[in-house]
Length: 262
Image 1 (spheres, rainbow, N blue to C red):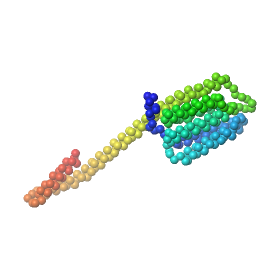
Image 2 (cartoon, one colour):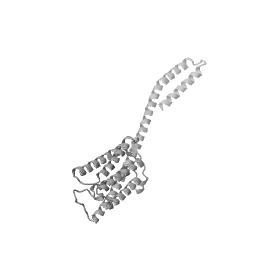
Image 3 (spheres, rainbow, N blue to C red):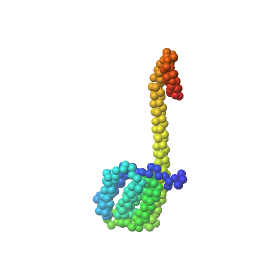
Image 4 (cartoon, helix red, strand yellow):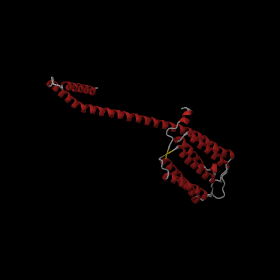
């Protein structure tokens, strides 16, 4: 596969709204359950109100997407806006809950990976770049990881900086294979659509042939009758003034019968 194929492919660049809505509801439910479990059951301290407001705005956007967005298939641009928002929302949640030391930081890969499978390569590159920016920011600036009591989580700097590097490398591999899979899937879908179109045209031609045969059969019987009657009239009225007309009728009936045979 040529690299130019990845950038030139534009067929089937759409994302099913139902798929995106379902994914976002799953993410929102997971975020809501996680922050409540950590805050109320484990009694770990972190900015709960800020996290709750971030998730609340995510709920509002998903309700709007589900009930106000009329299109069943979202365009590449619309899908990019929602995925970028989801990426930003998740980055904010991780910022308030430990930054790069939060194990859920791996979830930042999801928007770019989803884009690599369903959307254009340009959108995937933009979301991947945004993901890298968030990873770098979360490595430097973040609230402490929620812990019980006065316990503080500390790791060596080389380990801290190694986390975003590892995630970025994984992001590159996942997006590459996701892009290839998405392109091949769109090519198969396009080939299937073309095959269905050819089969539909062939079926239509076959139907026309059957109708023509039925019409020829329907016209064959009256033409044979006309031919037989014209011959009898030609014999009986051989010397009459209508003999020329009868001969003409007979010849036209013969011509029509030959055409129908062909």
